[in-house]
Image 1 (cartoon, rainbow, N blue to C red):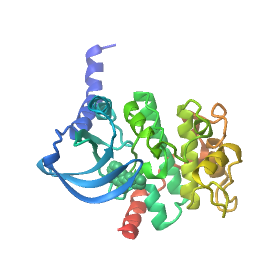
Image 2 (cartoon, rainbow, N blue to C red):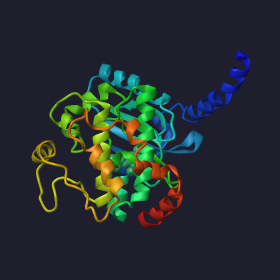
Image 3 (tube, rainbow, N blue to C red):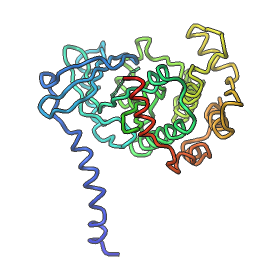
Length: 310
Ligand SMILES: O=c1[nH]ccc2cc(OC[C@@H]3CCNC3)c(Cl)cc12
């Protein structure tokens, strides 16, 4: 084997990696940023559209109020640096983070169509072929995070799945900083009704818990409402969490959805995390393979969404 030829062959990959990471290598200073409208709020922070004036780059900036001393805040910034190495087409790009007057600012790639939760609330349930493509993108993003960086997302839900006018689907707000997760855990923000039963019961969190959250999120996007509890019942959050742990998952209306979509969701929502399929199995599932054929025109769908929500 000719090592030189191998080195030359490896160059394009190296260059591509360098290229991507360079586009996100910007030295961020608060005075260089011009804020525009608020894009959304939730998960303990507010997101604004901003302009980085020196490079004329539009970004999304999340501000999180962290009640913590300077040492903890420094630790959070250090841990967030990992985001500079998370370069993948299914993961939101990261420009940098900084602390200003006790608040933590995280500057990210701008996704002009926003999050899937606000999209389905505006234009209605998402059709299956689109959901199949979304599922494939989310799985590829989760696999990248887990296999390349040993990162578990921990907060998969429609509001953390973002869309742009090119029809691209990217994941945001994954738990990269343990310190940040701890710092916001004290506020009520921690408990989310997208959490897997084992996590609601205080069990250890594994990558399998992201599979549950994916299943719940897909059902919500498909029927246009959070799938628990069944029609008509309204429960306060604590009772809802208990319901999710103790009651069977309400099935999708069988007449409105394909066998393979129903099967995909049922498998993601197996209560025992050890019996729940893993990412490897899911990317080979019939429901997802349909999206592989790339028959779905996500760009056309995104343009239609843009017309309806703008
Ligand atoms: O463009 C974005 N880039 C990165 C993150 C982000 C987050 C967003 O919204 C997040 C909130 C959280 C709860 N619902 C929407 C929006 Cl609406 C755009 C972006």
